[in-house]
Image (spheres, helix red, strand yellow):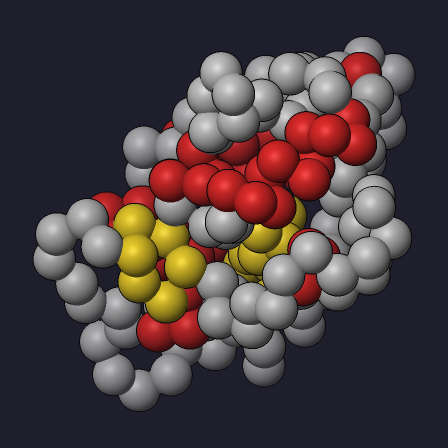
Length: 174
């Protein structure tokens, strides 16, 4: 099964350095969209087969993954730390602070390794219905958006509550 816990104790770290999410147990699925052409810019922005976050954030994400595994669910990671040059490229394309941080004003949480983009998957690794897909820059992607299916709203709330339980804060427009 995709979400079965592996032997070992999972990620262990101290301090605030960037650490690999590959050590999280059970390991989340990875679909790093900016390390592929499957993103809003339709081109590869960085070659990062090893997503990273600051140690405390990665440890919190591991707890979310463990909590979800108890319910037969898990996470798929779309993005984590991103280089400032990538943030600038994204800002240049969107120029909308609701969806992308302006590096001239605020480098953003992704460039500091303190933000992660995720979705929910079932025990087979199949994504659950959500209000939008990744990189959807409209109001349907906002927290508590109106007009989404009941199933998508329930799944989005389940994900948000699981993340908030471990200290994450939802960005209102994502």
